[in-house]
Image 1: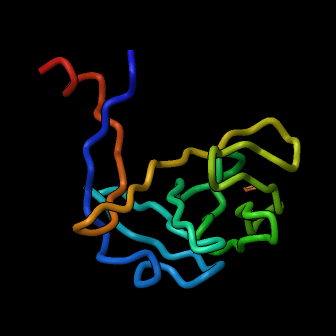
Image 2 (image 1 turned 30 degrees about the horizontal axis):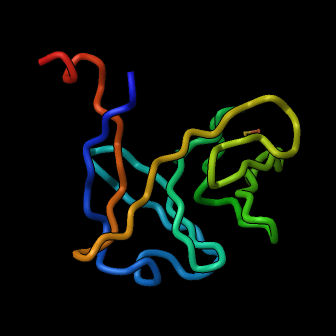
Length: 116
Ligand code: FES
């Protein structure tokens, strides 16, 4: 079954949410997430590293658009969460949409609410 999302507006424009190659932490629907901009594209991903819960908001963005965890420096693609440094983990990412009325991030509907 295709994933279903609740979409939340996080701002009016990508450059107001995060500066180029900077990570900002937002709270969306009661959950902390990270947003970062690379080559003018805004991405959203998990607040904590899947390896040992490093705070991804304290990491940095490399030249290739990976977010680098501050603890053990594992790298993850901001596009799809792929662990590009090869340790076999996966970083949760969230879809970001630029719409006429602002920037929206999609949070997956939980299975339970999907049934109600
Ligand atoms: S906690 Fe992120 S790489 Fe280890």
